[in-house]
Image (tube, rainbow, N blue to C red):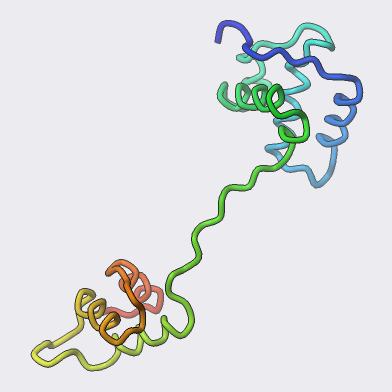
Length: 152
């Protein structure tokens, strides 16, 4: 990148705080890298490094440096040096009793005129028996796979 878009000028207190965080035993690698980026980009401590130099020195991409500097300018030091957890996944749809009932149906005898269960037939039967109001074939398939059940 040509020039730095964000100019960083850390106070002496912020520099000390970053050093404490970086040198902490329980500090995650990602937070250490962000702290180092801020220290290297600090214009108050002399001429800051270019983004290309920071990439090499910190072992991160241009995007990481850009995002770190942007976060500091927009949100401040606390936000920048906080570990950001990813959003949790949705809870499973089939658990406990429902799972046991699905497996029981799959292990039972197939409908008349059929030699075996298919995922489609099982899905229809699960809805018919009101085990679940609605369920996708994929959910039924993964539930059976979880229990190492094969419909063959």
